[in-house]
Length: 369
Length: 124
Image 1 (cartoon, rainbow over the protein chains, first blue to last red):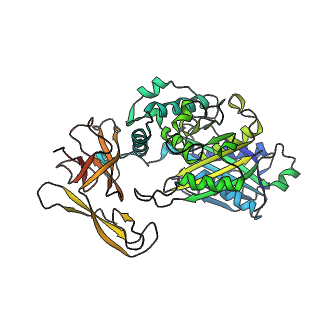
Image 2: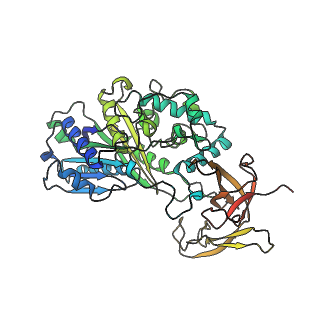
Image 3: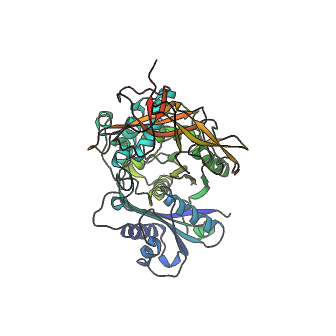
């Protein structure tokens, strides 16, 4: 594989938009990324479009509005990681030399999605919301490691504080520990403020060969130093195999020649607060069972030693599924350029993006200035 | 795949879970599977679990708000398989991780979405 750079990013503010389609979000995000890269659409040679449950061939129909240039356009779907999958495919395409410039785009309109709602062919009393699975993880951690519900609530407080500094976040208001505790209980111990909101949006990143990026005069040059992608290993009470995030991140660290504490910032799949604590451990920052200490000590807040979810994460920036992984790339690129404004991590030069997709799959990308 | 169960022959409503065990690597599964998820062998034998197991974790689901709160548990059987189902304790306040529970037929009239539920084993 040859070296690949990220030369343009764009996104729409995530949120609930009654009047706006997934394609309209995709159109805006694509134009923003092209403008950011200083490219015209005709210079893009391939496109990969991540979405889940939007329907139709959303990629070709969305990009037809930008212009019919005859390039290959592929729709990709990998659950919550669909945007990361689009990024990975653009990386592979440029890295393998199939093209010099590729677009990765993600779109989502979860306000229109029927998934995760009670009903269907199951009785309502059997409705098991996604939050419940993570609530069970939280209960087990509290029993086994001595975490408290407040540790998870502190993740919500931190990520909402970060989101309040991000003009593209769905939620831009801070929440207090007391508000997180007192919010509507979904599944014990997770209140609604421990859970990602439903939302819509679009996000895009343009990748190109380093050679081409240099000829375009891109500065600072941000390259993809790791792209790892794995599916699950079998795990059971008698077989403690490595988790998805463990296997995928180890592969990424090897590619990058760097370890977890070499990172300046990290974005993760914090759909539920407890996940962030799990990932501190699974990404290798500390042994299993000790993750809560990092939130306690403020290590993972902006201003701490290794900030997580600097744009608000799935909890505050939002999680429209298709674009989420690309919003992580958007944030990381701005941080590495030094253009992240009030949430800038001082001197950031290397950042990691992890996404999980139900099923399950995991992507870890590391970007470096 | 099937959620096969076998009522215990004592009118207690307790059930055993009919799973499978890989003859090559020994990994166990519930529901039973024709192939092993661990080593991909296709030679699996039937194995029974329960009715008693150990509660690994649980939660109380309070959504949608129009419905009464209801508990779900994950239960380990013989330290080999982890099975999730509705948990029907006498009181939602009285659920303890690590405690003994048993698989039973769902209470009459309760829509649980499965062929069995878990209830705490009464201390005798």
